[in-house]
Length: 219
Image (cartoon, rainbow, N blue to C red; front, side):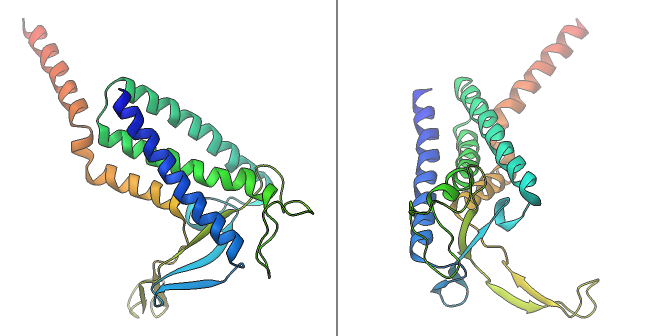
């Protein structure tokens, strides 16, 4: 149990530290919309902020912003308790890592929403300062999430015969994201790809219980 707890905490804090280091660096070294090309025009830093969910999706209005922040707090609390329970139950280490990644990702973006508006000023037309004299750009839980990874690896055009979007430009991958978003996405993909391996023990236990029930019924 101690080993799995240490693994889970290492994943959570590792992702959080990396996520926040990159976000703070971007926030204090780049202006909104500024780009740093890493591999040509295919992989780059593109500084943007969003008021909503992962990959730039938004929940409209100030009430939507507050609701999303509160939802994150509730979700993180619930997932943390769930993580504690599955570690205590001796669950598959790989599954524990996946849940830890989701917690880390959600917490990373919550930190932005909760505190960045308090400790940074705006990034429009200037590089933001940490703890500016005039105060931050938003109140508690109303800050924006910092995004920076932009990977438009495929740029093309939809065939004319393609329904609804024929002839229009096609771009993959369009959303701008951060380390926290990546942690959640990677976790989901891992759970989908390795579903059987992750839940094998639970499936075997259910099968054993069913066989015991069937045997007792026959007797």
